[in-house]
Image (cartoon, rainbow, N blue to C red; front, side):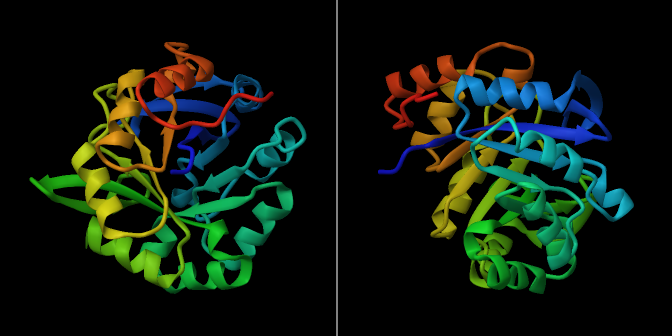
Length: 255
């Protein structure tokens, strides 16, 4: 069994690190560079940056933030939000990103998944899925940071994304995001059962036990967390120890 990755998620609006609930009600947290460095020093396995307003303006604004972060942190960086073309991906990789997470543009034009995978490798192409439950056992894909319905079933979309070349799936539960009520275990399990590529669970982590539950009960390969870190309810070191105590295999802290 491979190590479960602990990923610090940084949602960005303009120059600021922000946090919301259900992807709405955004509150400014601080300077993203300072938080990125702190989470790197605490032992994050990866950083995930999401420009949460990029889709509204049609382009990603994170190039400068990523370029600055890459000077201070030496772990994989994934960037999402407003990525619409192979050229956008090239620009972000040139700034220091290692992977891109694409949601809205992939829904509008699924061929983009294949194009990115073919050009940069499947390990670079993360399919980002924003999911909202419609009925028991059924979730719909939303786009534009949870604003727009797509009419697409989440599990079917995950399968299609894998077939088109996605190397990883980031699934964010809109219902749980920012609530501290724990991950949507049924949603995560439905996706991990449907695909053979790694799945990152995001949305709802309130305590260390939630991390253990989504890995052991739902098969998540990685966990993205924001609120619990931003508001200093736990450090990555504490979460790593709690994960190990709960039977979740994680990387030994080496920095």
